[in-house]
Image 1 (cartoon, rainbow, N blue to C red):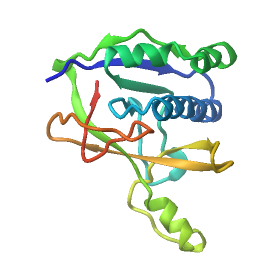
Image 2: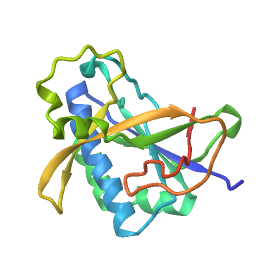
Image 3: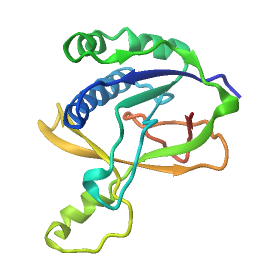
Image 4: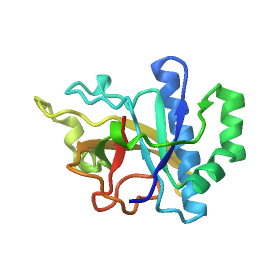
Length: 180
């Protein structure tokens, strides 16, 4: 199998600051993937946590980007990402090889079930929720000129599966992400 490389981005600050800045970083990554038509880079959240209490679910304060060394290098040199380092003190790590012997494979996907519930009026219902609520990041859409939540779901995978990823870096057809 092809060697995978990763780049970690750490976002310091309070939970509310992290959530806001994380949205900006995800938008920059999305813009880079979209404008360069890249479907081989995956995005994941090493400190992902789901809870039945929505306010406790979190993507964490770091973002990991996995892919080809050349493509990660191009992304890491993005002027927009450099601007985030300057403006918000984010820390962009060095590109390293994924330590395959320490990896647990997972699948990060965009979870649209929450969006569908709101679309059909579920927000006014009182439900006893025993199902974990997926964490999200708010993104601003340039094309639609609006903001929307990108809910992210993580599930375990049995084995590594290389494949395509969406323009948000989420799994398409079960492609996996290395968690370590």
